[in-house]
Image 1 (cartoon, rainbow, N blue to C red):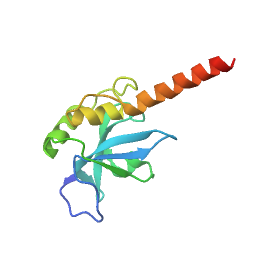
Image 2: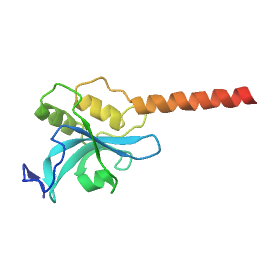
Image 3: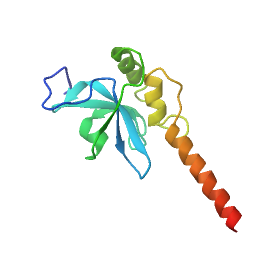
Image 4: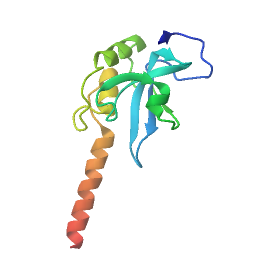
Amino acid sequence: MYFQNPVPTRSYPPPGNVVSVQTHVFWRHKGIVSDRWHNGKPLVISASARAGVASEEPWDTFSAGDPVQDDGYPSTLPRWEVLRRARMMIGRQYILLKFNCDHFVALAHGQEPKSPQLGATVVVALAAILIGAAMS
């Protein structure tokens, strides 16, 4: 059962804030802090490959036991609007190139859906291919 606005046992980022956990060497999985709580911790709304869709899940499921970083609040939209937009995407299929966690967070905050992490990965991969080809 999920509750709203409990007295937290420790300090968590406010609803609407972007949070992230390291998933691979250079990648971070991002989500949005919910205003709903479970077992004394806020839920997190995100689009993940693990779930296959955008979903609202417990803090510990989102973090998978890793430290969670507060990445702040990147827009001027009201927090309730960010959460409304995020919840409208729940159930949407995760597609790495079209709808990943970066796209999800940007759309929820009313921004252009882009994925800087994916773009950087493509650039590095292309550079590696070109360097490999030049050395052959």
